[in-house]
Length: 110
Length: 114
Image (cartoon, rainbow over all chains, first blue to last red):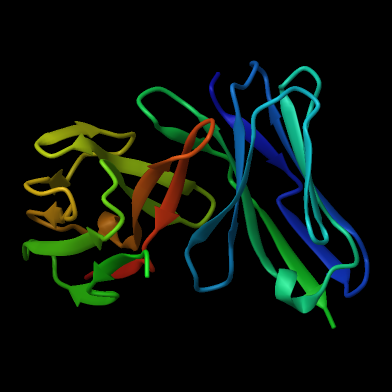
C-alpha cells in the first residue's frame, strides 16, 4: 500500500566504482526524501525531490525522481570510503509523517 | 548550533523499571517525533507531536508514552519496559522546508532491557 521498496538491500563495491540505490512505490508520490546513516550514527537529511523527472546533484551524488513520480534513485559516482552507510528513502504520509524504506547498506572496499 | 539532543545515549535497565529518555531541540520546531530502529525493520514511528500539548500515536505506540509540555522538549516514557523494547531510539525535530518536512535526528539512545 503506502510502503516504499528499496533495492538492493546491500551493496558491496570497490572504492572508485559507482553505486545506485532505487526506491519504488506502487502509488504516486508527492515527494521523496533521501537520508544517509553512517554506521553508529543517526539518519541525516540529504535531499527532497518534488517535481516529476527532477534531477539534483550534490557533488558525486545524483538524485532522480521518476517521470511518473513512483520511483527515485540515488547514484554515487566513484565511491569513497566516506560513502559507507545506509541510504534511506522516505515518502510523505499523512500528518507530516514519513514512511520509510528499509534502506540500502553500502560497503566500500578501499 | 542547531541541534537535537537526547539523553541518555546508552541505557541498560531491567524489566518493569520506569525510565524516561529526554529529547530537546533548539530550532523552535513545532513538530517532533520518536522512532525506534531495529535490524531488518527499519525506522518505525512511535509517537509524534504537532505542537505543545498535541501528540498522536505512530505505528508502534504500545508500551510508550510521551508528553509535550513545552516546544523544545519531547520526552519518551517507558512506564514498564520489557525486553522487546530493546532497541535504538531516535528523536527527530521536523522543519518545514520548501516543499515538505525535513527531519533532523538526535544522536540516538541505545536501550537494553534485561
